[in-house]
Length: 286
Image (cartoon, rainbow, N blue to C red):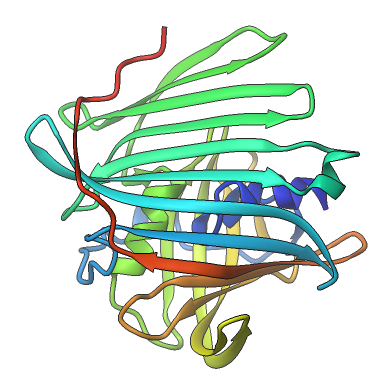
C-alpha cells in the first residue's frame, strides 16, 4: 500500500499511475511499439485559466491515508505563455506513525503546444530523500536529468526525447486530446530512473459517486511497459482512472488493488481560475 500511495498520490492522477509499482505481470501481452506512439495535437484547454484540486486517498473506503493538492497557474516565462503545475502530497497523521510522506512535484510546459520544459520531483518519505530535476532542450530535443539521493552518488544523464514527456505534462495532454469510448491513448513518460510506455484504454462511461454528487465519467484502464528494462508488459493491479465526461476532462478518481484491500483517490475540492504570474526561467540546481 505504501508504494501505491507514494507514486499515485505524489503525482496525483492519470499518467502518474505509470510510476505505481502495484502492478502484476500480464503474460505475453504487449503494447504498441514505442516508435509508433502518436504525436498528439492538443484540442481542448479546460485548464488554461488555472485551477486547483484537492484529492484524498482512503484505504478500503475507511481510513484516510493521504491528501494531494494540485495547483495549475498560467504564467509568462521568458516572454512565452506557459502553465506551471505544482503538486503537494502528504500522508495522513495516522499513516505518519509508520510511514511519513511529504512529496512535491512540479512541471512547466507550453500553454498551447503542451510541450514540456522543466520537471522537478522532490521525495521525502521517512529517511528516504531523493531530488530529481529534468530540463528539456527544444533545440537538441533531449532531456537532461539530475537525480540526487541522500547517501548515494548523484546521477546525471541525458536521453533523446523521441516524444517522451514528464508525467505531469502527459497528464494534461491526455486531458487535451479528443477521445471516445473504445479508444486507446499511448504516451512515453519518465519519472526519474526509468522510462515507460503507457496505454490508457477508454473502457466505458459510467456514473461516479463523489462527495459533491454523481458525475458522469470515462473509466480508463492504464497499462504500462518499462522501456529501460527487459521488455515486459504490465497491467496495473486492477487499477482504473475516471475522468469527467464534460468539457473539463477532469481526473476525479483513481483506484488500485493493494496487498490488503483497495486504495481510492477521490476529488474532494475543485476550483477554476488562478492568478497569472510573470516568472523567470527556473534556475539550475546547484
